[in-house]
Image 1 (cartoon, one colour):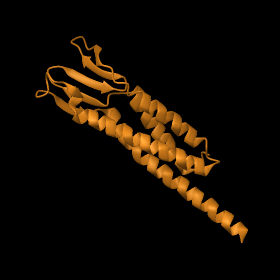
Image 2 (tube, one colour; image 1 turned 120 degrees about the vertical axis):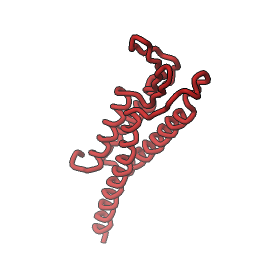
Image 3 (cartoon, helix red, strand yellow; image 1 turned 90 degrees about the vertical axis):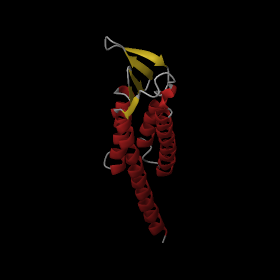
Length: 159
């Protein structure tokens, strides 16, 4: 299991998702007030550097679901067909999660009052999400390579 390179790629994706889940913010909105979006919602930075919740956005569900599916994918290494199907599902959900995050970013969090004065920028968690995405494709490539090798070995035995 750990000898296969795709397991390493899947661990990289899990670590990136965990940092995004429990780490820093996805986006910052900087103006007269500072707003940030993390996995639990939109928060406003007050004068005493405390964060108060402005909007509840349950983004924490997607990384948790993806982490669970990635762990299932890692431990289904004996059934390559199932591992490939699960990995495809993870890639679709991960893509949808990135699209949702970008839609939130470009919709400017729907702040009508300070829309002209706010400066929007990505937070560190968004970069970790983006780094984990290619790791999934590299893992898929490794699973396909293993499946192709096993299929060729099986066809050689039949001859």
